[in-house]
Length: 278
Image (tube, rainbow, N blue to C red; front, side, top):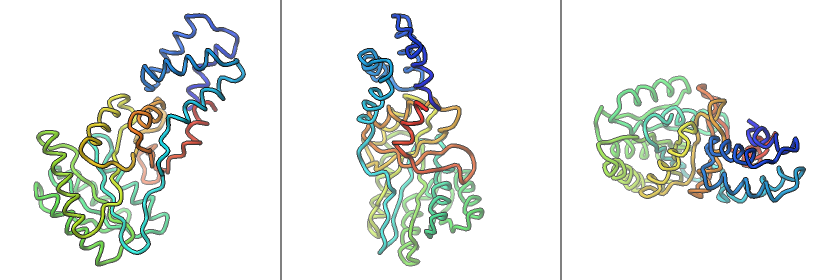
């Protein structure tokens, strides 16, 4: 990625005119960092010696990242329940399948719940992934009650003593209120059987600042415990990871970097910051 290294290359080469700094600020904004954060970084860089810019900027960026735990929850004595939420089109269902693949590679048993009953394609997609990954998928009738599917899956997960229950939820109903009410209902029904350990919000990295708006929308109604940032490949500009953690305080737990089941990895804050400069 090394976007920051490229952005500050002129300054390292000895050029520091007003136009150069304006160009740097524009480039930082274009990297999806946000106008306020871009301006702050420019000020930090201006006050630093040329050979210390990377170190000074990195120290500041580090303070913007979430301090919360990035590890996915795990309970040795009962199933760990994970709800996957997010708007349609962010890669939510695919990310659900990738998380299953990730957990299976760690030798964990998994049960899937296709609670996005309002979108037949989502259920079919999850069933296809389930067959591919050799994981059972609990489904219900099209346009049926998502909470009922979640309840059946939770009961099965408890009876079968699986390590993880992953629940894929709807990303769009008629109104925002409908969506949030439905997510709340699913959580309440699940918690009659098992606690909800994680609520992971899927955000498309290529949507830039709109991803922050989505995150705040869900945070207003659902207790988000972590983020899955999708499409963090060559098409993503990189700064959104910093921006979304700074604005929400919610840790990115996983990133998706491609279409395959294995194009998914735990998010390393240290590795991410290093990648901005190297």
